[in-house]
Amino acid sequence: MGLKKQIADFEEEKARTHDRDILDLIDETTAALVNSGIAEKSVGVGDQAPDFTLPDAMGNDVRLSDLTKARPVIVTFYRGGWCPYCNLELRAFQRELDAIKSIGGSLVAVSPLTSDNSLSAAEKNELAFPVLSDAGNRVADAFGLVFDLDERLKPVYKNRLGNDVEAENGDPTYRLPLPATYVISRGGKVSYAYVNADYRHRAEPADVIAVLRAEVSY
Image (cartoon, rainbow, N blue to C red; front, side, top):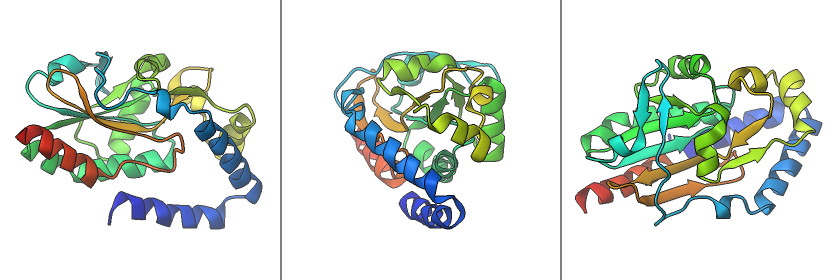
């Protein structure tokens, strides 16, 4: 089952289990974010990807330019382990990890979670690829992905959905990255970019792998 179908199934379940006022507020604030044009201003195909060094869940530094010296890299930005859409996406990429490696690519995921919470997300989803901690959204900001969560959603996230974003990120600002997936070629150029201001839409791993395969065979 593809990621798009898994998300659609989750959406059906959410419609049955979540209060209507919460769903309406999420729809309203998400539409406003889409209409802001933030996704169109982010790093895109043909751009040089901002280089970065971030710690993985075990505290080891991972540098993008080191990864892209020999092979193209998939970099996927996610909101956090508290986000069910992110967990579906991470597990979907994990299922394709052998295919990614077999065609000569690699994969890292980036979120504003603290290192401890990144480790928890990796363990919960049984991930065998690096999960990097972007404290303060510094790297996501360089990619043009960061936005401020609508004030009305903050108490909803924390008190009604049980998502303590401040504690998860070790940051009181409620700044989050748009979910985004990139293929970054050897040398650091972006050859694929999926950025959607509606967090309920994600790149399909099969589509990303098709780009990666073309990149490797180029």
